[in-house]
Image 1 (cartoon, rainbow, N blue to C red):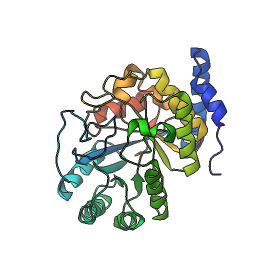
Image 2 (cartoon, helix red, strand yellow):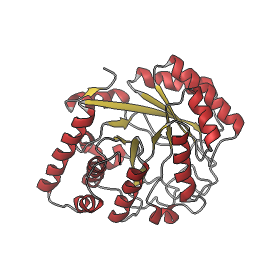
Image 3 (cartoon, one colour):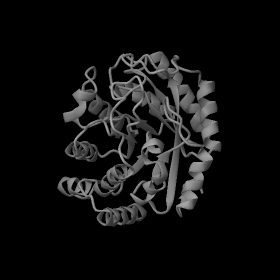
Length: 315
């Protein structure tokens, strides 16, 4: 196995901790582990919502679902020039990676060709590592993206398999696993994670992380649900900052060599505790906004890195 981290049993026991002093000991251990494998550098990434809304799936967390009544922008795939401009803005803001994200189950071959063109331009001009999140794709489409210059493919599992049908009834969990495996076969690095705080049990959080560990993904994006009005989960309780931090720490300790990237829901769930993500073991995070919700200013996020005693991986 590539990963030699703590067991699922120890991970579950860690999530159950209530004592602040015991939790802080876990953070110290997670920080030591992160610094051993990633040093003092922190990576920032940014995304563009390149195709928004009108998704036929019924994911209960998603404002872009056709089943949602959330008030969001809806538009077809944007031009390659729009994608490139967003990438250049992200580079100026301090990001290391830039991802093209689209709504829906998948893209047509023509749309894949358009994204390939954008990826090639981004890789050539911006200096960023190009990533993409385009839904369920076969190996052939993923190879085309790899040839165009794509570095990493993002495809979240969303939650544990045992909880998935409560979150989405229009997709099969097996299709998500196959897409991750197809991307690996195509020679792409893999970014795959989940959204926590969707009513899952603690045991299911560990189940999800264990699945990712077995898949040997390269990066785990950790999202915390931001309940959006108009979605099925709009009334669910938000996680507390310490719940979020324990999830980060457990992910780090289970997968010491894997990039742990903090993404959506950071601002609304963690509030004044955002800088603690580094001390819980995160080595990277998303900045500059999410799919349909705003994020924090990139300059403020860069300052957070400095104030925490770390440095941008651009340096």
